[in-house]
Length: 394
Ligand code: PHB
Image (tube, rainbow, N blue to C red; front, side, top):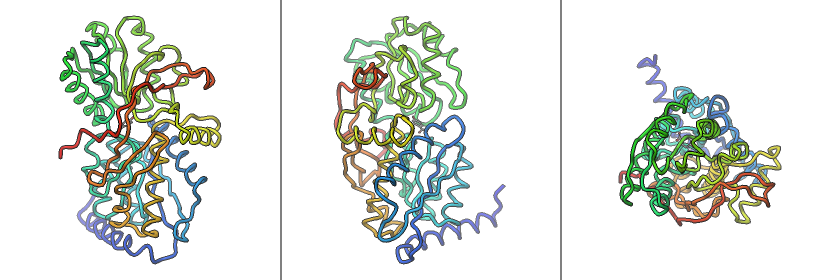
């Protein structure tokens, strides 16, 4: 239980941290980045992908800005929001971090938002993808994506490709609600029919009961969003129930055919059409360089969309710190807004108004790629340029 006294002390601490943020450029101590990630539990792959990408960025770009050392303090929150909130407070009040970053799932980003606001600490969301997150604090900047941003493209593709009826299956929390809502409205706008809407719990989902419902409903397609880390289990159960041979087409957001797990999914994933903002097979020179360096530094581990958002998040933080010479607070936030650069995923912008990322969204198909070790990859075959998050309420 938090007592009134503890709350008072905390508010004082956060206010003091806000003053310290403004003064930090003057002192010669290290610039600290508090990186909060799920390094354990069912979202641990998100943590290890982002951690590896942050380390790669620093190996390539050094650990000095404006003559000061940059120090990343990595903390594991296990994707538990109460832990995230406590850790964020400690990082701000005790460690006096200049930036908070990471946040593997939506509830953890939302739990830390008030800390960013009260202490005026810029908070860079590198994973969580519910549209409304950036509205939870004026100090939040996002380098990942939003579900509405990537979902509309697959709804359009489906309607144009002889899919007339669909069942939706999403994870039962924020990003799932966004995916369900935006697939539903866009598909119906295109004349499609939603036959049934199914949801599975965020923690330890069992897909067998919902897959039976899909078989019974016999739609032309099943649209799926599940958070990174659940795709492989889902695909296994999809195949075990014979759905890959049922004539029901599987379409998804790229979270399901996640590069972290895709290599091990087997033939069941072949031909799955999905939409997303990053593929490890994106054929740009910048991405080829990124993938080669990431794999070399991580025993062959393939980077996924979480890794690229962590890498780009560091880019946004570094360029902003260089511009402010290490000063934090509002000045640092302002220096993050409006950044334009070429990411391994393609061209991106941090929208100055919404603090959310604007990026290209690709339609991809899972294929074996002979030139890439005959492994499964999401091969891009269409692109929608410069997509803003369509989910903002204003
Ligand atoms: C989220 O919790 O916001 C989230 C996590 C993993 C994803 C997408 C969204 O792949």
